[in-house]
Image (cartoon, rainbow, N blue to C red; front, side, top):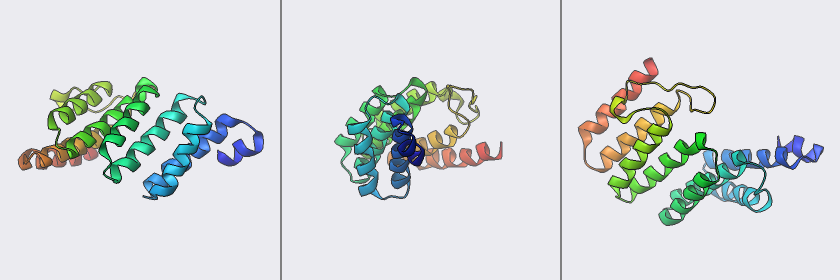
Length: 177
């Protein structure tokens, strides 16, 4: 999309390409380039659409989280949450929850995981038995294992090892259908 945007002169297409590069660098743990690409999106393409700017803030939050700069990570995740469409909120809520868990703010973390699951149509009391619907505007079934991993990490950090093991075991049940 970067190449197409560059050659067509369509800034929205180019901004998607830069956002994709920021995400790819982040997944590759190349924090310098992930931050550089995300900053380009935030500075040069702030009005190109909610699916562009929100993920750029998410990348910045992820970079700050990996640098143990938790307050800044929370700030970026909140900016991304408010700059993104509602159907993307689970992504930011789960990242905020993980950040709070890592800073031993367990009640906030649990509340945010519950909110993320509500936004994804997964009632917390039905974890892990309910699967996601996967219709347009709602996350697909891939989200449940991610939320379960987050909940398991939270339980582990709280010293609730049996609960953590049960949540990790439930991920396998989800994978098996």
